[in-house]
Length: 435
Image 1 (spheres, rainbow, N blue to C red):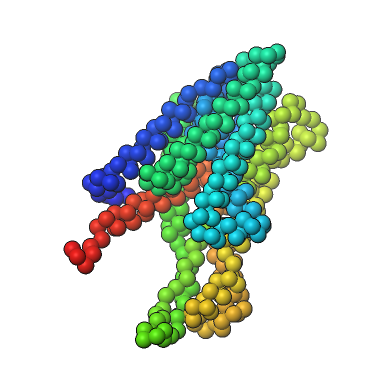
Image 2 (cartoon, helix red, strand yellow):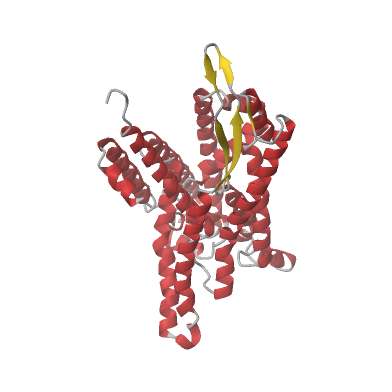
């Protein structure tokens, strides 16, 4: 990866794109520490210490701690992610949007424009909800009279404007920079939290050195976390490049005086075809009970037991987390792949899978392969997602901010960006017949 960046730096065009991407990241990090007016940053920081496992804790993780600072980019890019997910689901469910998606570049631009409007709408809704949550926890400086109304308008507009600005910066990276803009911004936010995570690990290790009789177990568990972290990165890289290749044979056909086809190829199916989306879906749903608890001051009886059962360290949470990841992995696979359409495309192009008859048998064979590959990928995602929870419960090292979702996003974005840089370098070093 470092050799790729070194070689890319030698090419003037790519160097400009790399510098532009770095500039956007710097602006993003500056915006993450610019405070929104009329909020008590110290009170919000104290409040966020108990927000782990909630929707706010999830947002704080993706924004690199921007929400705990009451900053301009406090909501991060999550409204755009939610809008993109909604548009993907609606594209499958609503025929006009499905036809629009098949119109090529023009259709994609229309859907992108709709996604921007949906992002602004979700940003306004989330900004309003966050304001009332902060108001209820006495984080706002004004709570009565005209000053409170004016402060509410400014805070909500600031949150929403920050989301729109991040969305614009991501699009600028897509146009003038390197990599996927939204993914790069997510990557920057997660990387910004890594010093906090390793600082927490060091605190556990230092406690073991200062008091071996009470915290001696951390002398082993803290370094083991680093080893496990590196091992998980290696496994994610391995699984990210893994794929199931279905062999395809194209028959020869004559068109005019030319002969086409006759070659053997394969249909690649990635093991992690759904990426991190099942984890995002599952964590969003399971964060609902803990988020509701933030608005319930002193739950008792049934509700107290209900909220405790859905705590991030509980076994019920881990089991439901695993099951939901598997369910959403299959759901996302059905959105991305249509075995019958793939089989029809193969038959129209005189292609066939060796030993499998064209038509429905081919569709059933592809569906069976997709089911097996999806199960492997879903189990992998589930294990990576719940591994930090299991490790924290077994070792007592709770409160670590680096979860499985963060690691998968971080590694996936890094690999995808390096591949894009390599492809652009290959295009610039391609020699034509005139060279």
